[in-house]
Length: 99
Image 1 (spheres, rainbow, N blue to C red):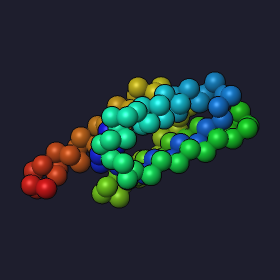
Image 2: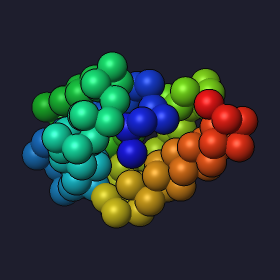
Image 3: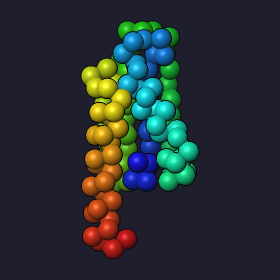
Image 4: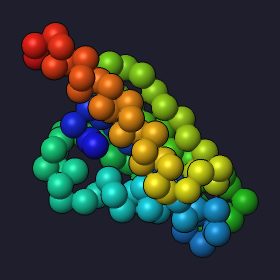
């Protein structure tokens, strides 16, 4: 998943019920397999103490596209699916260009 990603920023309140999807996504990003795929990917985690602060995820891809995701609106698997879908699209594009 991280091969096509240059940066990830996850902001959430760890005590909020709406931050579960952000924590699931972050857990997947920090897996050894993903870290090995792109050790240069910059991962920023911002935690707040206020449960009313929105849970947000910002992903920057190699091609410069920035994806903003509201963590409260989607579950963790849906967020991962959305990010992987664009990552696969970039991988296919690279394969067609012969990189």
